Length: 208
Image (tube, rainbow, N blue to C red; front, top):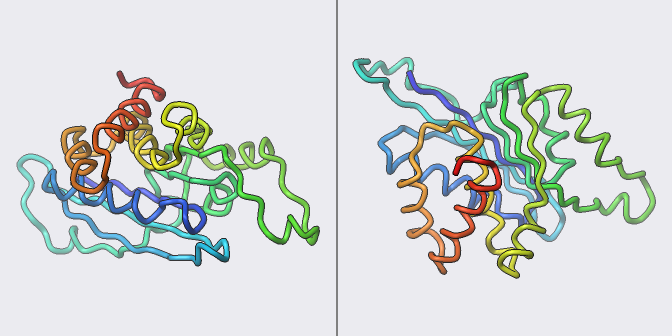
């Protein structure tokens, strides 16, 4: 039985839902069953946004079983195969979903909460955040994806597609590169640029 769970987390306006949609569409293109659930925070109020993406499929020779294919759209604690955190503090906030073999991709571009900016709370040191996340998983990969996008494309519109490339390279997901590329073509404008961004993410993570 193929099972693979991905949790994407971030702040409203960071493209969390769009990234989850890309991963769902690619899996459908490959013939997998996909279930999921979303938590939408207000972008203007810095609300937390979460996308649960759950893949289900049959291995060669397996027969369909309704019970095995019936799962919740919400991923249980300590069972995520991959987490993509678009902001460091959100990685720590959702660390309870990780286990020691989870793949964790963190965008090292912090968005300082309002309560910290107005002096009600002190901000956590990023090294401390990453150290705490590593207590949950041994596979933590940290990139400043915003900086990579600006440096290579002079735009933040490619953050999602770079993230897809990183996820494909690092995560051993049961979806094909062909399906991800087709999803980019169907979902995003400026296909050639976004294809380059995807390939850049794959290269940075070392698959090419």
